[in-house]
Length: 269
Image (cartoon, rainbow, N blue to C red; front, side, top):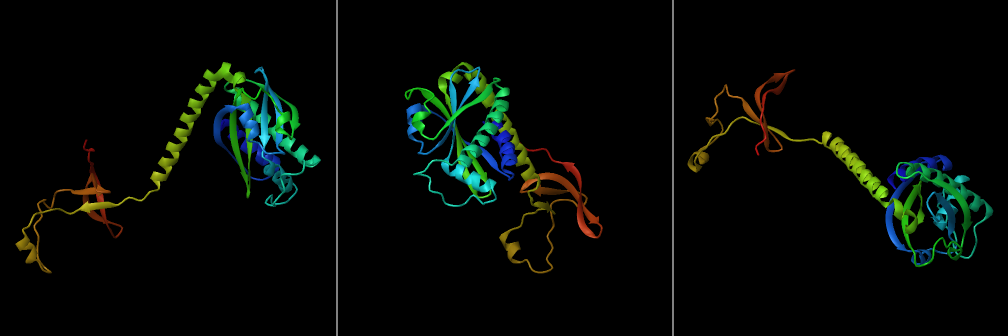
């Protein structure tokens, strides 16, 4: 899923000649009949093959995305309100959507190449979910929802695959999923590290410490002298966000007060 999202992001942006983002929203298993009932009419449904896997797959483009794609492709902003129900798609809308699907199928092949090489082929398009029955209503299907956003335009493309078709290669799919999760984790760690490298932290150098009684505290005034417990030749302690980290000596550098690190303190366990 993540691989397809990355590939299709680039292909879709090139096709529409505008920057777009494609992300995986969800992956679910449901009965095919339930899936069909959740689709509005009209819907832009596209049946395809995934050889050597058995049966057919289904790609569904959200109606509002179909209308927005055509408007955007011909110079509009894609944000106009369209009446979805009550009319079929125009010839230009059908051709435009087919181009989007054919591009998606090419990237689908590339994404699957690492798991189980397939060859996709476009079969037909439908607008009524009743005519896109790739399996019986009671069969279980895998439904993957992808979200597409492009300069104020948003919509979804849904991929529906029969569970029976992918069941023989499930171990491969699970292994690839774990690999993708590890890759995502590494990306997250790298981004977190980069953010941490830019975070400002507080450094404090302690000149010294001593103990006094409340009576001595009340007698203190401007000019009073406190004798600290450390010797003048002893290094000072530097704390980072309250944690002792270095031993340092005070001095001056380029006219500014400075310290020189002489020792790195071991972290206390």
